[in-house]
Image 1 (spheres, helix red, strand yellow):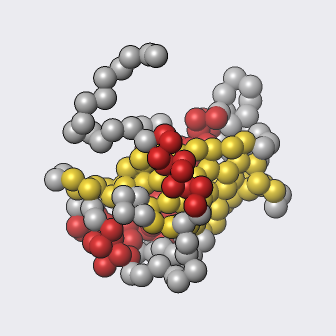
Image 2 (cartoon, one colour):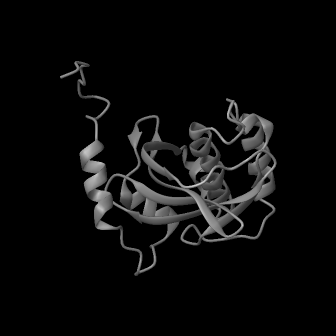
Image 3 (cartoon, rainbow, N blue to C red):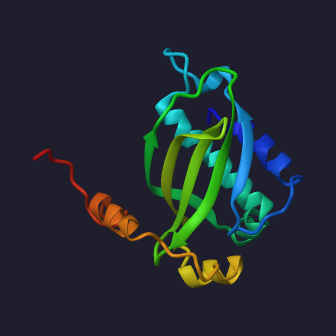
Length: 181
């Protein structure tokens, strides 16, 4: 909710930016706002991931995928994410969110995203997303039919499979009782 207005403004502005394909890299220029920082006066660790949502929306809108997804009733949800921090973004600092799809598997679309300032990576995240409808997940076949075939050299890094398997929770329809070991 905290980025709702910013997201709506981004959806409007991204539609007027240079078009891309969903397989291209997208660069979204931003500035650190007072609502992005914490008491330490830098971007809050959780805010990085929220801001990265904006980068994925920018890519989806500019590639035309967002409009096609909405027409089909598809919505994106994050299934897993991991982030590493290198430097802190400070209040009013200009930066870009660099976004690209790095591959797909039978269940998810994987993104790499970077926060970049002055030509340096400040943070990098890997995000596994799923497309869902009211009746369940969208199949990879449906996604590729809508998005088009990925480039032949788009190969999901092997470590991504290990990461997903190691951190995976049971599906939403499978019990997952809480008990600390």
